[in-house]
Length: 195
Image 1 (tube, one colour):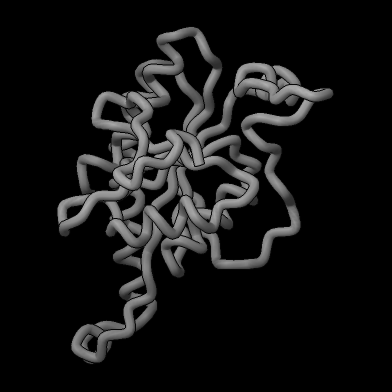
Image 2 (cartoon, rainbow, N blue to C red):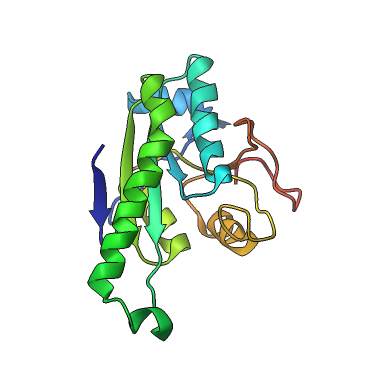
């Protein structure tokens, strides 16, 4: 699988919402996907942690229920600025290492999707995690961003602050939080399942 590496650039394209207004009622995700004439496009941020695969379980679950889905896996390489690292490695070496790791993470995440014949593409971006997730979702016209719920500690996909920031800053694209089985769950703050 080829992973697309992209530098940050402002997006001028707005993604269609997962649910849209039709008359005086809100369309479901199924109706919105049917209106666009394409499968439900999901952005799933992935890394080395198991909880980053929970979004993959969500896509597999939707597919098993008969929904057409397409998955865009994203790995974000944050810029390294620590002098302890830069003393021994150049920015080019660091970028190459991050891109190689991203390739491995994305290939691993896409394997069950490929086995289920679910379209999947991989992307790698260098930059801030929150901005990269939101920007990529807009650029790819994703219908939703799928992440584990905010969790404290070092073992989660992202820190509680990063997941919360993605949910807070995402205006046009809903963020769906899911458990390890791919079942949507409300975040710990008691908010809606879809933000």
